[in-house]
Figure 1 (cartoon, rainbow, N blue to C red):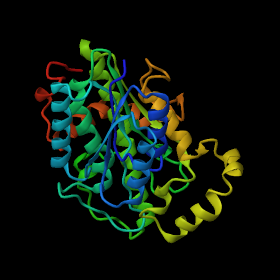
Figure 2 (tube, rainbow, N blue to C red):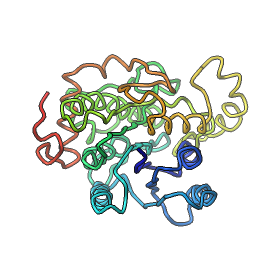
Figure 3 (tube, rainbow, N blue to C red):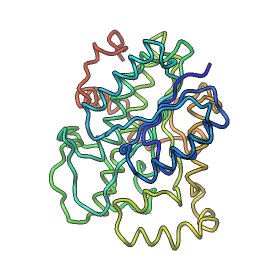
Figure 4 (spheres, helix red, strand yellow):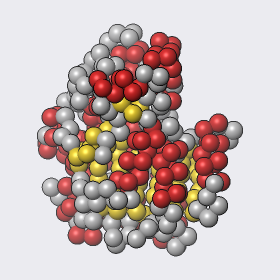
Length: 333
């Protein structure tokens, strides 16, 4: 039964066509869309233009800075209150689409004191999930986390330093100074490490969901949406070399590059897959890792249960949430 679908960074390259697909092909859902900038941002205007083509659609746009945990908690509280009061239907899906990287500058720190890529890509989305699980309806739903081939060491051409989860997990949110001034290499490593965390945490989340009877119908997936040739990410916080490569090589030569990299595709193609997963039109009972729209195996390091549990517990602390205050208060692994 249709309900509410939340999409973070709904004005992104992937999300705009995803929203169009949702409103066109699944019009029964209510779309709650978050953006960082509600003002004159050109991409938010594109999102509004898509919504305007569907005058009967049930949508709302909310400004949300994912680098501010207090704002994230406030947003989660407002959504939960809206569902409890009946002004929003029960949650059907949470699409954790937003991401951050900086490949042209040094390490960034949020107002919460956390490394920005890790907070936006993992901690913030985990916070939203944990705060809103009780807002899903009795039929359950789906949590869609965005991963990348970058989480698997050696698989992405931008990798210079392999992503690893340190023994001291606190270094994920408060890392020391970079060992080199290689902004591209170290920036991409930070991004890739955040994606390792996303996938690793997803497995722990699914184990907890399966332990609580009224949550077993909620499934979590982490999808590598592919290498998106037309994504604005290639031109945001990236060195000039990558900007020009995106415009002059990757986009025009995508059909040829696809022979070498089968995951090379457009953001619109990825957006369609994400919505089909979110609505459970695709693989309604499946949990776990996907490459494009196909169940797949994630990197070996993400499959270690001890690591999953350690990251689960530490993520709860970073999110400023106590397990006893969640729907998992009586669950143990």
